[in-house]
Amino acid sequence: QVQLVESGGGLVQAGGSLRLSCLASGSIFSINDMRWYRQAPGKQRELVAAITSGGSTNYVDSVKGRFTISRDNAKNGVYLQMNSLKPEDTAVYYCNAVVIATSRTLNSYWGQGTQVTVSS
Image (cartoon, rainbow, N blue to C red; front, side, top):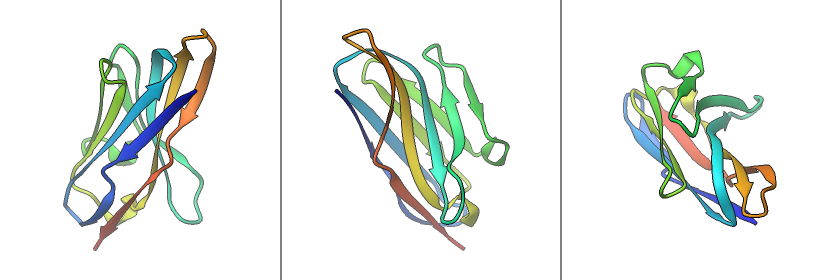
């Protein structure tokens, strides 16, 4: 089994910064894509940023230039540095990882979510 544990959410004023972390553990052989999603109240979950095992990244337009996704393959971790935060960034943020387990099965796993609240 594989677990994803997130940390780093909280309350911040507009213009501030937060850094989210997500560490994967368990029966991991390798990790392919790692992603951050978010879900605001009353809205659908949206993909915020993604990073491949090779380090290629992509972002939703609304966060380009403000958010940076990175990963540490040795630690099975993915991070989201969020700068110049806006009230519309308020949401529960979830990490997601496509994992090849030691059994060589491939599955997608989710973290429990971490709340980010940006006050105006």
